Amino acid sequence: MSAKKRALLVIDVQNDFCPGGALAVAHGDEVLAPLNKLIQEFLEKGEPVFKSRDWHLEKTKHFATYGGTWPVHCVQNTKGAEFHPQLIDDMHIRVISKGLGDEDCYSAFDGTDLSLQLRRLGVEEVWVGGLATDYCVKNTVLDGLKEGFQVKALKDAMRAVELQAGDGERAIAEMRQAGAEII
Ligand code: VGL
Ligand code: ZN
Image 1: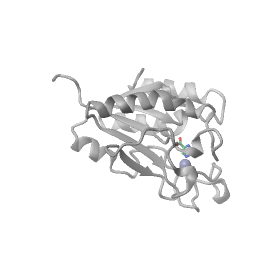
Image 2: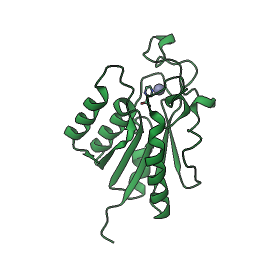
Image 3: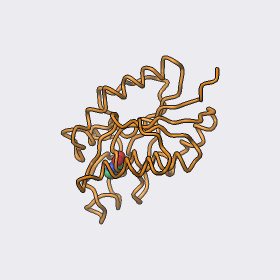
Image 4: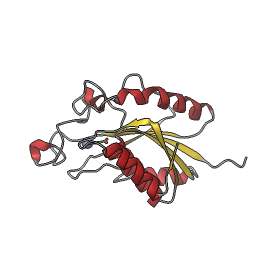
């Protein structure tokens, strides 16, 4: 076995980021098919799969009502915070909750034990997709590189919020520049 030990990171594929949700990403549900295919492939090979979820308190400075940027979304234990019902679930998938504090927190590595868990598993390379390209996916990819992991960013399995037109493409360029392989 010479293959690099890898893990799949499925970022924030939650109802609120999908069409009909509180902070819907255009075409957000299109990440489901490619990600489900990969989830299945990783699970079949016994390779680790992580799902992150944006997991906010009702009152946080992350929300526009309290001085932040965003409409209320992904409040803990609400329907909007649940993973999309079509996203594959399996007892072997590990869930990482993030954004529990008052600060904007976009990376699945930020304030979580993701890096520790990956190291314990001997993971060298992470495959990253999900929502949204220009926020949580980008920041997770950049932090993964900083933490010393090789990163493959799954371009077809991510979609962008695009507060400004072009943010998605700029995020891809930034990830590539930082050393991620865009596949
Ligand atoms: C996200 C905006 C606000 C994300 C989270 O998951 O990309 N975006 N909170
Ligand atoms: Zn959020």
